[in-house]
Amino acid sequence: MSANALRDLNSLPTPERKNDSSSKGNFTKPCNGKTIENVEEHQRKSLASVQINGGETINVGVEVANLEVEYIESENLSDLEDFDTCLENLLPGLNSKDWILVVEALNNVRRLSIFHKERMYSMLSDLIPLVVKSLKNPRSAVCKTAIMASTDIFNAYNDDLIDSLDPLLVQLLLKSSQDKRFVCEAAVRALEAMTTSVSPILLLPKLQPYLKNRNPRIRAKASMCFSRSVPRLGVEGIKEYGIDKLIQVAAPQLSDQLPESREAARSLLLELQNVYEKSQDLSTTVYEHPEMGSWENFCLSKLSPLSAQAVLRVATNLAREGLVNGS
Image (cartoon, rainbow, N blue to C red):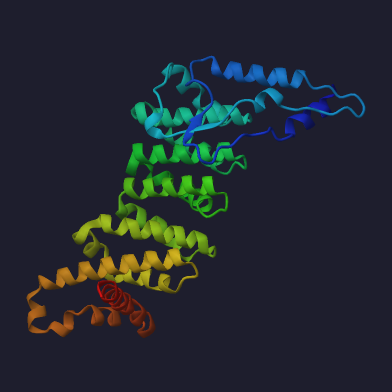
């Protein structure tokens, strides 16, 4: 077989089995020092069985295709059998040109995040770019496993990821906005893990630029993350961050293209109104001049008239819905 023919064969896509409804994610056993060799042996056998003779049909990757990709939920992952070997092979595995080895390495990242996060901590600066590389991979098995690895990394390292968050956030917003449902759903779960793991005071500035992204789907996912993060500040945290700043961020989302953005903005504005009115109830000035502390006057003083009216309608519409539902 010529070198060119071998190169062409290697570039052909390997068949991949996906199971959208499955919640599993591994190949065979956790890394024990032999799994990589076994996979490479599969590939050698596959290539050795290919022959090119005139117009003969070429069968590529028959044995590799028989390896089923499963997506295991975090709580069902087992600990590593050979920790030192896996740690040594982790970065080379993530950087491999063999997608099977990459998926295995990603699953080992997940195990290390869950069972040995202290030992992997020093590798994060080198590891995160390789996880991002896998998030960009067009092969669904690699991409989804990388998304699941991102979820476990968020849960393990929390605020320690803030300096490496931007490239992860970009890719997860993109993946959560695509049409491939099982990838999209995994990315949404990863974003939810991010909003519950990373401190809102650090996360909100990272999310804010994406609220103005040209892609309406990305704006919608970013709005939902932003809306979920703000309540985690708490009443005092919201006041310190600035209710005026937050309503100026949320108000434009009320007229956004997608309903997810609009609903996230309404939820956030109701939270802000609740915090504002509670804080005003504690002020003695309000009892003397109640009109000065009203939510309406606050909105009119911080927003344009049109934006203020849109914000004020949120509470009005909610009250109407409550009356209708109660009748």
